[in-house]
Image (cartoon, rainbow, N blue to C red; front, side, top):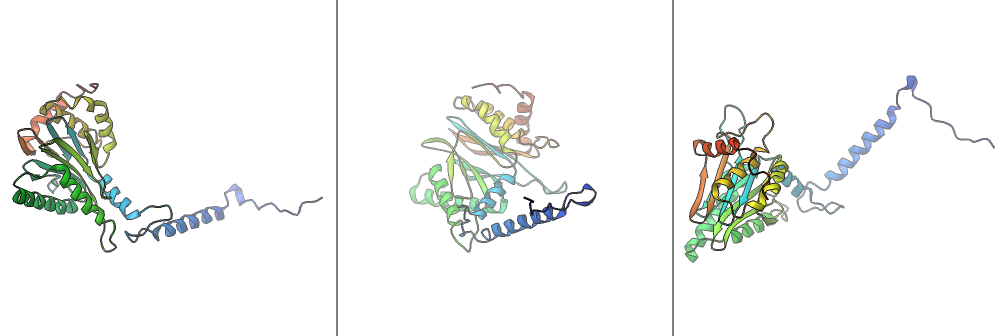
Length: 279
């Protein structure tokens, strides 16, 4: 029995049939259009159960300059990599004091971070005025997380495009928290956020077990070594683009910038590799 099927004509000169590539491009465009139906509003869920604007805000944090946090029993250290928009501009500050016992580093949209900084400072001042005692770090972080979550559930608002590392020391001890644009928050012994932060996390995972009993200088050294892992190949960690801050038992929140941080960077990079196998 003779088949009635006909073979598709081959493309001339052995070249692939362009109609298949055109159909594939049309399909990709249609899928993109289908996805874009669900990312124009913060209150709209996709069929896969995703809220794309929250994911976009979290992507802004991943694209921001890197920040590293490390905690011992008595101290918390923050280290941040600063960026400049051009060779003619100054570097944007990334570490801010909230109160004498608390501060934070940010990655993402700096303007959003400054707004949250103002809110956190006001909350600390009000708490100190009403209760005559410093505000607990965890309580303030929870309020910031609640404020961030509200931005994910209002059609006239957008999520904050910034992630925070909050370091503080209160009557319950030393604390290091991370907040997300989604409204989630986590407490860590060591963490890194921002661009190329996975390299810093890998370093911290190798060394964090020795952190609890570590003194302040060694903790700063490890934070700077972790921060160095996030630097692009054509960028060196220097006093001009790095900021370090610490807080702890008997020590107010202190930010080291410029020449003040230069000795710590020299000590960290001069003894690079020492202690990487600890823990």
